[in-house]
Length: 312
Image (tube, rainbow, N blue to C red):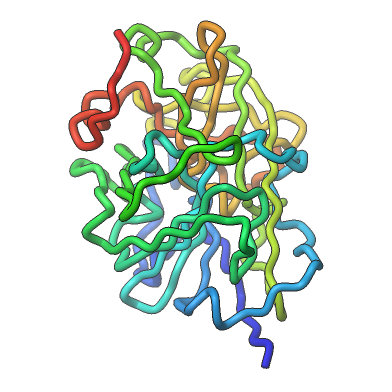
């Protein structure tokens, strides 16, 4: 029997928002209530391989806002992470492969997780996944949330997932380069950047799915904007360890893209510069910027816990 379920995209309102089913007050800045949204899609806590049968039909609208369908092997460092929580809820987030045994994602995706499934090597996320994908199960012991992560201020929104078995690299699975120490200090404003993920088309509260699930990887390009410009939207929420990207022409990260990679070409090399964190509650497609955790601000912490070398 084909079962149905609902993918819930978390949206903060002006007065109340929920994190894994636990209410908290909305964020308040100097000039009023902050309007922001975490970019995740909520899932039920279920056995993804057994509960849902896959068909060839894609879910309409399940994609990066304003995005383009990715070519095969275009983003070999892209990971999908299906995360479960003790209250029975779950979320779909993105991640970035940085070595054969480690993936970076967002803390707000994984804080409080009891277990997760990391999926790599495919552009199509099917529930259950197809034979082309590589699935690795991890537990809460394998998920390291930054110790200074603050879900209210939305700072230090970064986490490391340790894979329980090493990935075999191929043309479909590759790590993405981290910034070197000099690049970590660069002013990235006006740098062309690319975000990829399986997130939603717009900031709807939920997308009801009956039967099978098939999400296609999408991407979009937009320039990095200065933190000063971004701060006019998000006020004092923006810090030096954030990267903001324009949402011009409705191209943006959206629900389901949380934790996913933002890449740029630095000194001729494809480099991970950000991790999807949050955006405006007005909606992903409305033109507001999206906020990312700046990877270059966490190089020492990353290498301390992964042994991934950082170039000078």
